[in-house]
Image: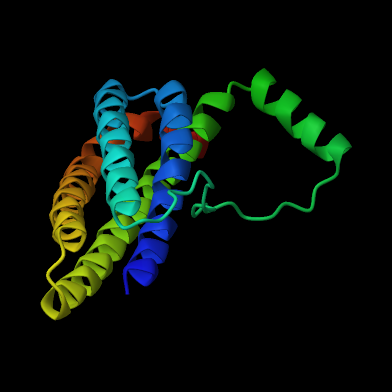
Length: 185
């Protein structure tokens, strides 16, 4: 049973590993200072979650993974050729539309942030329930450690998900004037 829960925990660790990379990118890309600060806090929390997961997985006698999961994106495939893409970029730069596109892109990234956080909440709820079921069958300190770590990780994921949900309207309001300028031209 320990090997099965370790497998599940390693799957979530792979997600956390990918989230670290995404957060570093988001911190550098976002123009919203409040979001940047929150993402920096989230990065520190994610690294703490990685460490907790690493300790729990090791405590179960398994090797923690260093692989990275594929995270959700909202990108729509484009069928444009290089020439058309280059012309579009030049057009955006010439007409000052680049800011509007950047604002639209940031809104897409905020949506992705929330989707990833909500998925994290769901994943941790499932993992916690599995660990609780195993703990009910056997009392072993490593399983109790897993339950405690998963509870803490779940609380952090819920906190971040709630923050994004509560602050998304203000972030959109901040980005909207740039998008609106595109619509009025």
